[in-house]
Length: 227
Image: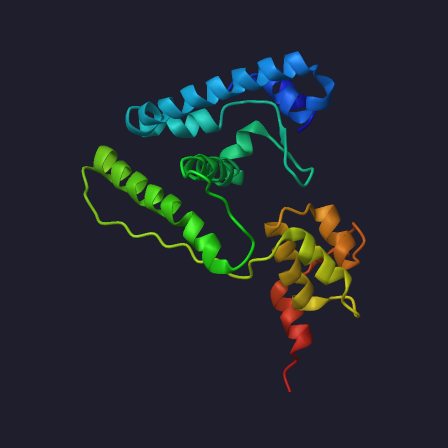
């Protein structure tokens, strides 16, 4: 998060909350404890407000709310996203899902996600899938007067810890290229690596020659030329 995060208006978090979460080492033990408690209280109240936001706010207001003129935000990749583009970029939905997943897991006593085997990840996420089903049913009921049986299933493939993924890539005898590089970049991106980190791991320079400049279809054609 950049200093702009401390200049934005209050949401669930205040500017001081964001500053603490971004630089906790700059706070004394007492100040950190006070900030932690304040953040917990705000999150609790925000969760209680979800019911009103989901059922009472006119859906036509959401577009204007999310496209409000606000200072640019910086993504994990270091790209600046203007406040008016937040809705178009779709940043709110994935991070919102991640936040709600943390809430769902917190409700499960002793719940946790282990990297292996894959079925453990799916089992841990199953209650969240139920929450999604119920949430969709509530949306249809409140906003469209529709009832439907919703089924959501979560399948986890290629489950691996990010450190192990990076180690396996570093141990490869030959550098990756073409479609293999594009696929590997996607896996590293899912693991939370930034574009700069991915380029470094794959041996690409952070220029137009980076893996992100490669067209997956063209790369596939290069590796599998027509005979």
